[in-house]
Image (tube, rainbow, N blue to C red; front, side):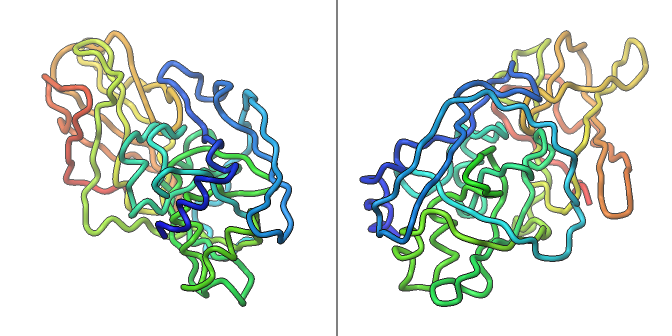
Length: 293
């Protein structure tokens, strides 16, 4: 893997970066640091031609099936990385978690990103060339937004390589873009409980931004609400971008949150009472005793 990384980092792919949004970005429109990638390659070793342009992307696509239990045909490519891991600046807002989660088998998604509701979803992705690809492919988690040449996934180099048979990784990389098929699968975090991280951009005590980590199911978080003690009602938090939800002018006292979840049987609310302490700290992840199944 290290030799493949070294070769990639000497190629033009090292110039590619993935979606990167700030906490104040709209949840519909990302900044021009997102790259629209168009890969044009033939089976020519690592002599790959591509072009990229800076764009502002508005994603208004309908939700894709979260209960998908079948393989869908698509295409996938990969992005440059100095260590073959993910990027800590992905559009989902995961930071360092997004670089290393799932052993760095991560990806930027296009349609499946779905305005951020697709962040954290797991997919089994396998390339369809039986001469160089394995039957099982790789299980990846969506941590970023990425648009390529009719691709649904832009994989980390580590994830891309793991679709290949043991002696065929360099051959697979030479294609640049490959035909794949994918299906949604339950998340796999080795028994970890759901965590609520106070995003680094939060400012105690009146501005709170949170992000959900280790969401181990095929469900999707549609919205987050916080209990306001003065009005005695639930107030919807804003989806700032990706998987980051925030609220300004926060009132003091205990923090009670609830999540609207879409899963195979429909919609429901799951409450996480008093997980985040009254005197919370930016950058700290607080473990819950729940999972959003």
